[in-house]
Length: 472
Image (cartoon, rainbow, N blue to C red; front, side):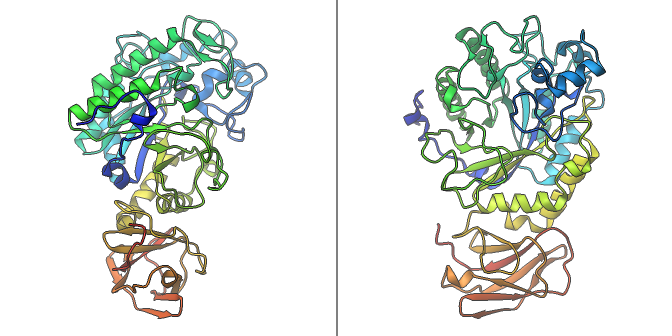
């Protein structure tokens, strides 16, 4: 059993476990004191200097001069209300971790990532290192521990994420960065950040999380550019070694040196190429890749514009069920997982606009899951010659062509351009089971005959049995 050293050379030798490749879907949960004011301008630019659509950044922007959040805070609560004054209203009075776990399992998620501590410095577990936590205040419950138990009872993986390297609020200290060991600068800037006194405090809490819950993943907001300052390599090496001692297969994310934000990243020019990054998978935020990525990656995003619950987001601010399904299929076809966020209310209920999208995704996966779970990328992700958009996946000797809209009575595919083998059988995945379909091959086009109408919505998977995968 190899022992990992706190160097990138050693840590980069760690392998991504099969469970993570197979899972495809994780649930992210942003829930905390920020769920009480639950406000951000939905049309703001992500990472803006004085505004953000992320409601979980409320405790930063409420102290930012000339920001919409500060204006809203003063008009709604007055100048004397501090962020810590919201703690008593973070009640979790209707929170049922068993119901959450049931919902996530029913959707088809393989893992759940709860924000153990966000940038507001309020741990959701019973921490020895600060009384400012959810077990001592607000809900007076070990939220991390209760959800961990409920999730694992349903055979899902669990991790509490840690974002405290960009801690922008700590009660008892003045300023936008509520700790005297912070340089007062915006988190996206290259300069500034935490000093070693704060790093010791932060890492003590993170190690406490690992000791208490043995998470299946470290999902932490530590950009590579700050890895030396926050001693990330030491923490990761300890985590890998602890997991190896107990025979567990774990993963660690890599927060890119700057957040990748946008609808699509050009693989030839994206900000990962030509730079040095580490971790088991990379994490573009509200973004995807335009081609298959050799490294494992995970797209993370909210169903709406915000991760934390934003009370002013409307239905149109959320992905439609169809957009969610099609985006998910695109991500999976390119070697990605989707970490899809829900932002519960302060009382522990999940808003219907989010729940309905989760349920729609789960319903689609109940029919088409064979094209997604435990799949791997095929030789190409997209079909340039089909009349509709198509994404390919491959699993257990079968290629899956997923049409992102109903093509009509025929689906034309460019499969013969990539492999010599023809399918030994072809079937459309339907709510009633596999529907066998006739196929013809003419030149470089394979044509699948389909029924007049589909029996479900959003995207349509065709299994091409016995089609090889030259990538493997």
